[in-house]
Length: 558
Image 1: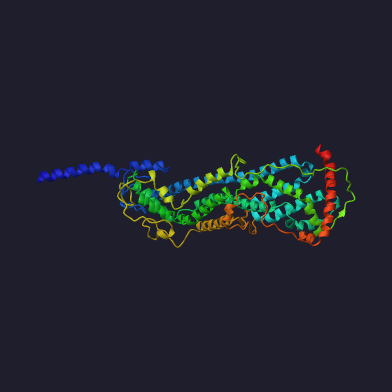
Image 2 (image 1 turned 135 degrees about the horizontal axis):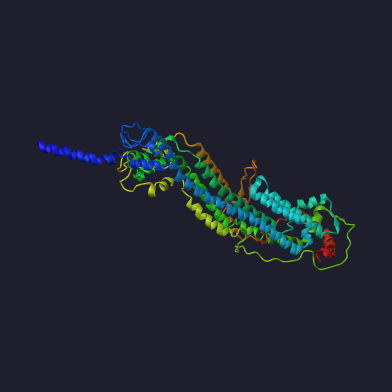
C-alpha cells in the first residue's frame, strides 16, 4: 500500500510538471500581443490566478486589467475594418458609375450642340450664323436643367420661348417686305402653339426632352446618393456594449492562452447582428431604392432614352424649320388675319426672282434603333447594362454584413471554436437582423428603444429619393435641387403615368391625330373674301422675298 501511494504521488507530480509550461506559460500571448503593436512587457511571463478582469472570464489568465483595456480598443478597430472595407468598395463602385453616367450625359449635350452647329452652318449659312445665339441659349438652358432641374429652369417655359423666338425670326425672314412692331410680334408669339408653324415637332420634342432629362438627372442623382449614404452610415461608431462583446469574442481567447482559437460562426453572427442592428434597419428602404433605380434604368434603355433624344436633335429642329418653310404662306395668312395686316416696309425692293427659298437641304431620317458610341467612349445601353448588375449585387447589403464578416479565416468551423467562455460548441439561438430582434441577444446588450439618429435620417433620405425616382418613372420632375440652389422648385413633366409610355418609343414627326384649330384660322374662315386677297398678295410677294434674301446674303455665301 505504501509503495502504491508513493507511485501515485510521483505520477501526479510528473503530470503537473509537464502541464505547467503549457497552461501557465504566456509566451504565445506575448508574441501575439506584441504583433498588435503593444508593449510586450505588459504581458506577464506566467499566468495570473484571480486577475480582476472586467470582460474576460476571471481565474487563471495571461491578461492584466491594463491589457484588457488595450485589447478592447483593438477590438473596436478590428470590428470596424471588415465593415469599412466592404463599405469603401461599395462607395468606390458607385462613385465610378455616377462619374461615368454624368460624364456621358454632359458630353452628349456638348456633342449634340456641336453637331447642330456644324449642320446648320453647312445648310443655312449666314442665316444661321446671324441667329446662332438662339440655339446656343437653348443648349445652355438644357445643360442648366440637367445640372439643377426645375429650380433653375422651367423646361416647358424654356421650350415655349425657344419656339416662339424661332417663329419670330423666321416670320420676319419670310415676310421681309413688311414692317413689324414689337407689339405685332408679341401677337405672333402668343399664337405659336395655335398656329403650329413647326408642325408637331415642338409637342413631341417637349415630351421626349422632359422624359429623357428627368430620367437622366434623377438616375444620376440616385447613383450619387449611394456613396453618400454609405459614407454617412460608416461614421456610426460601435456602442460600448458592442465593443465589450467584440473584445470577448476576439481577445478573451488570448487571456486563456489560446491565441489561435477563433470564434464559433453562430457566436460571431449574434455579436455582429447586435453590433450592426441599426445598420440592418436600413435594408428595407435601401432595397426599395435600388428597385426604383433598376426600374429607372429600364426607362433609360427604352422610352426615356436620353441618347436617342439628344443624338438626332439637330435633325428634329431642322425638320421643324422645314415645316415652317413649307407652310410659311399659310402661317403668314393666318397671322395677318389674327393680328392685323402689317405695314409694307419702305426699305423693301425686289431685285430678282428665284424659285428657291433661303432654306434648302433635306436631312437623313433618324433610326431610333441606332445606338452608336456617342459620348465618353461608350453608349447608354452599355452603361445601363453594367450598372444594373451592380445595383442588383448591392441589394441586402446591410442585412448581409454579419454573414460576410463571419466567414473565412475570421471564424472556426465546427465545434472546435471559442463560444465566449471556452473552447466548445456555441449553444445559443441565432438572433435575427434589425433592432427589434436584439431584445433577446445573448451576447450584445442592445437598447432597442434608442435607434441611431444618423441611420434614421438616411432611411428618410432613401425614402425621399425613392419617391423622386417613382415620379421620374412616369416622366414627372418633382424638383431635385442641387445643394447650392437651396430653393424649392415646381413639379412638371410629361404626365405619363400609364403603360402607354412603354409603347411611345418612336414618335418622330408623324402628323398629330387631332391638330389644333387655331383662333386665327377661325377668323379666316369667317372672312373668306379676305383670304383670297391675302393669298394673291402673298403669292405675288414670295418670289420677291426669296430674291431679296439671296441678294442680301449672296456676298456672305460666296
